[in-house]
Amino acid sequence: MKKKKRLGLKIGIGVLVLLLAALAFAGNYLVDFAIVRKEEAKDVAPESTVTAENQAVIEANTEKIKEQTAQWLTNVRQEEAQLESEDGLQLKGDVFWTDPDSHKWLIAVHGYTGRRQDMQDVAGFYGLQGYNVLTPDMRAHGESQGKYIGMGWLDRKDVLGWIQYVIDLDDQAEIILHGISMGAATVMMTSGEELPPQVKGIVEDCGYTSVWDIFSDELSYLFHLPDFPILYAADGIAWLRAGYEFKGASALEQVKKSQVPILFIHGSEDNFVHTDMVYELYEACQSPKEILVIQGAGHGEAYKMDPNLYFDTVFTFLEKECS
View 1: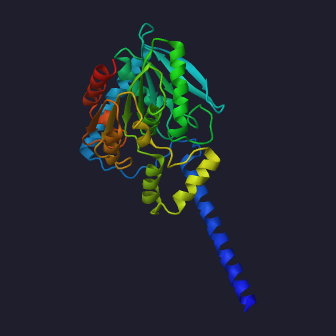
View 2: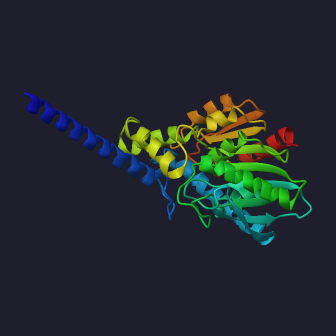
View 3: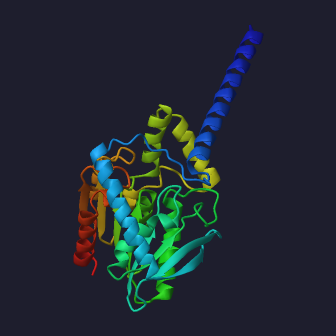
């Protein structure tokens, strides 16, 4: 009888060990899939629900915007920027001097698996308004060092460093942060930190409420799995490997602490970072705020769907709330 009990106990322990090993494997796989550096842009978004008619508008506007950007780039002085992060990574960026006498500055923050060049189109619109521009590569992206993608949480401290970089260039700088997708989450997460008075406002475009929330959505539509137990395992593994937890990396909690004005922008047809998130973020924000939802636009396409409405709203907001 005792032998049978011992055998049953051993089998039970063996099964438990196997389950824990499988869970650790799955959690590690999710961390590798989601936040280990990618050498090429990774498309993890679901199939777009943007109509063919609206997609044609987006493509036509994109072509015009690219022409505007190319013209702007021929008229500015560009220089490389470099910064060391708090944890010793070498981060790279570009500075565009539209007008050396201007104290208006934009720090433009790109999205997941993107690079600093992705923000040049947005930068061009600011350049036409007299802004000098800094476009950094986020850690683990482009020419910046790093093994793990920060999803905005690690990057918020890097953005604080880039803010100081601009202030060192121009101690009278009036700085706007503008991010798209992960870049939007980054600038929102930065908003909850203690910011120098030179930071005047933030524009976030299609940012997510938290890293946990966006990964929960991805786990559901990519793998058809619930949060428990894999996302919980990955959360702990991310803390051990990358130094942050998905649940703690919350733009929603950070905007509650923001002292600077925030403009929240989203596309109505965004089925990657769901449009519902922008309303949650807007409601949570306690600083001066506005919201703009561009009808017909998918993820990251709001300024391409209706550039006039988008940038008229941006610069009207900045003039009203941030001057």
